[in-house]
Image (cartoon, rainbow, N blue to C red; front, side, top):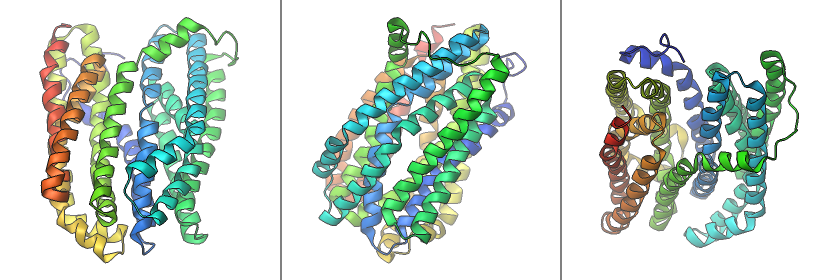
Length: 441
């Protein structure tokens, strides 16, 4: 990082320009979910959409819980890159691959347990549960590839090759969309086709970019990757420990969205399916706004490293403001076009009718949530991972308590209100811990 990249008084325009490469890769991710939802939402029966909602929520919780593989890789690789220690960068990459494969094998072996938990905790018909089992049985096999993709993205971010990391994500998403659409629309494989498209798409992306990365390392670092001296207990332990707080934080966050699906299933499959449609709007907005948070991580980290409090406060203020303004634009677009988008996603009239009733929540939530998204970027950039963990734990516990009460008395409106309050809880708790960062200056 240089002063040229991160000036003392970074403007909103500069933050926006830094975020452009991330926008495209971030938007590609929820696009896969939207396409999958659309494919299932046009099969004429709500059970396909309900099953996809449950199954993808479970897989998302599992995979996102190991997001520390990306974050940890970024931090370690960036430091090693600064010291020009290319051999250790390669060893770190290979060690993370081993850790990812070990985690993936354990998850695959736990497949019967995961399927059984889904059956216990989600109130669905027997037919819907069978569809959930089909999706999970196929999609869980893609987890090794998904975790490796996390590491590859972290590697390229760590060596400041953001265009390559973005290309990797976009490639994976496009392959998923094309293959899933082919299997569902052309071969009529329904929910099995959606899961199979994701499985094949992820492995094709891994193969392509592992070959590319191998050649990139030889050309860039002039070092041939070798599986030698990788099993060093101290270094493996460091890789496990360095982002433990982020792991706990992410685990709680992903559980909160699984909780939304769980409560939706209690209201009935039609509400579960409608909420699955509406959640695509929330996810799309969050991935878009997270681009600012990712950019802020680097800016904040640079300011903290330089102990430049003026630069830090300017970056925080401008990033929060531009994120909020962007969220307002997103909400306005949702207000105008949400019904048309819902009609494209599903042709089932009852699901359209239910979704229309709750559009107000997808309009309200993005501007409110923009604050906690940006605070996440600030705390990660400042490496205040203990505080971000504690804030999330407090917020999720508060969310669960309020959601149980509000859903019981106000139905689906209560569920969406509790989700809005969850975003507020996150902002308030992170704001409470904000002074911890200021003590670094």
